[in-house]
Length: 92
Length: 473
Image (cartoon, rainbow over all chains, first blue to last red; front, side):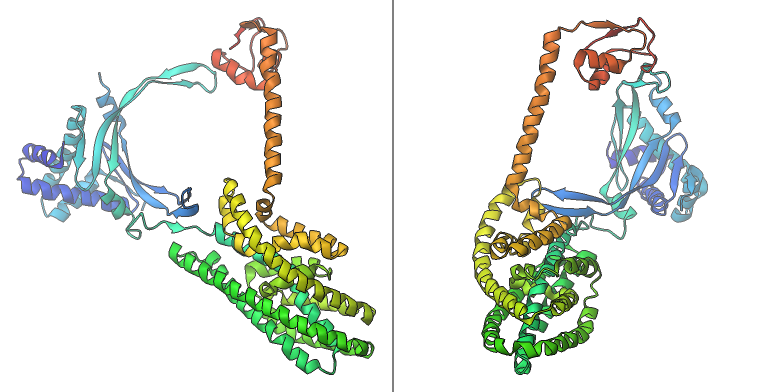
């Protein structure tokens, strides 16, 4: 399902204009990412939780150039589905 | 930070941002996530622009062991909703590092340190030489002192300074690796400086030759001048503190001086190193220590002969070493390529280190004492860094061969035993027997316990009831 199809479905459900749905969608994503970037975790009941994960910096070795490089530490977005969703998906 | 936000918080912020009613924001957010679940449970992959991809993944059955009882059981498989964030997300979450690819800073640190260390470690031994020649000269030629001192001092300060610059470059490399390019540049610069320093050292050598002649002429005058010599040495010592103060380079200075002090007593070791006076920079301090020792030695005659001997040896060694150095460079390239295990180490330090290696073989010829002392110095160097390994690839190879043969030896008996014994498929446990014992009995090694455990299921492998039948893999 592409972004377009996805937005269409939402607009059908909420009876919003496609334009509005698009705008709201990007705003929603923006808010979630903002909170994650601030170090907060976002839990959506019945869906799952988004939380930031710190990845430590590490040293890698390039065997071709025979040099060591440092990959800096970074933050990634981690998603974990909720127990309720797991139960729902594995009903049958 | 570290707050746990709920759906409600997000919906509220969304309403504020979009300027819509809270209810709208709520219904929209709910629809947003519900749609994802719907699409995913229908077996679809949902790609959301600006966020990422949601996808359903099947996790297969897997076996696990109850830690307390040792029983095996199966964890049933299930479906799992996974999420892969878009690249855009990484940028949002890591604002300071926009270009994740370029951010990779070279941690060349490892190599620079290797380069820097060996040089510094080797340096101390070299230091000895120039200083001694100086003192000796001063002793014999008190009248011409001024001329000679100027002669001598001209090369010295230069040598001291340039190497320090070079070191500064290296230190910077170590302490502040900013980017690969910068590092390379600095490294290049330092290298160039050192090369110039080497050339200077060579010039100084020539001058020494000249001084040597003077020495011979003045030999007769020696006796009365011993006192003068002491004065000279003292004066140089006085002057020295300033130079030593400059040597504050933290990393290298401390250990280096320690090493050099050990080495310095050996007058002979210095010969080997004369060619590398250029590298001596840091060593002003140790050299003074040497001066003390030299001056404390009793007879002026002995000293003169020693110094003459040394200077001659130096001249011969200088040329000899240079020739060998060139040969060895070629040889080492081959060796380093062979040693795939330690490629970086061999590569980088190769240039600065080479001069030292040739010296080792040569020194023994010159002097038996020097041989012994040089070996001391060598051992010190070796302790500092693995570079020596590069010079002895043969030894390593031999080791490897030995290990190989050992392995083969150990393998053979293992392979033969089971074949001979025709071991049974099962074993009935006796009182006092453990799996380790069983493994030892049938396989000749305790390591097979794991293999046995794999084939059997025990409630508690550490306490197997007497008479239990154990399957043997």
